[in-house]
Length: 87
Length: 232
Image 1 (cartoon, rainbow over the protein chains, first blue to last red):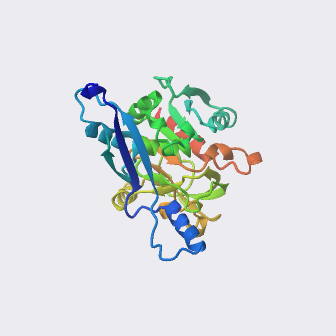
Image 2: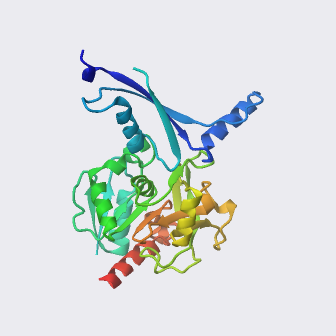
Image 3: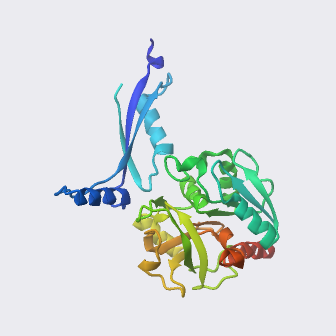
């Protein structure tokens, strides 16, 4: 199998930016407190995407994933992201 | 004047908007399909409420790439009148025609009820028949109506008078108790800098006849017709 047909796997992590209210995170935190878990200071929720893909001849896999994150997977007003190319 | 109501997969207030314009406002109106590459010479384009593309990923995130949205963006940049209601507002935020973003309601619940919104700016194509400070009774129905914008953006909104509506009580007081979703500074609707694009979470089309509980929504559609008549 040559390089350009190789399947890559990227894992993208999307989180709310610091300071952006996270009602889901706060609700999960209260639920845990009601269940008796103590000492939980904060919960921030987020999303994970696993992307299996082939990058074209000219594109670096990381550039392609970065573009996808910017264009669709995140809203830069409220979210931040990071990713790793694991394969 | 001719209105166009866009149908995205998952729009569900398209017929309400169409009927309000056709039977109450009595203006010409036609549906526009999300895959259309023309706005069929409409003078005002409505992006209706609903759950376009199932609200997958983020509300409005996928609809922003529909082929009709390219035309809507060009139309808006040329000064064309665009109104996004509820999910339509979310789409306008995602496509960047309006600033800010929507978060989940602080209650994490779908909120569906009549609210009041205070007209903060009556000098827009969408509010010129209402009075500044007037409280309009119009319903909301959403899970993600918690408007958010960074400090710098909020400052610009205020400087340019882009905040059009705020949630208020029956007599027009903007209070935390009147805020149905946690929206920043009770913001219920904003416009762009040039005032030709409006986004609002409440549904004026659902409040256009007294039999529906309120006809205050008419102010918005009639203001548009009034503005268009004067411009022409």
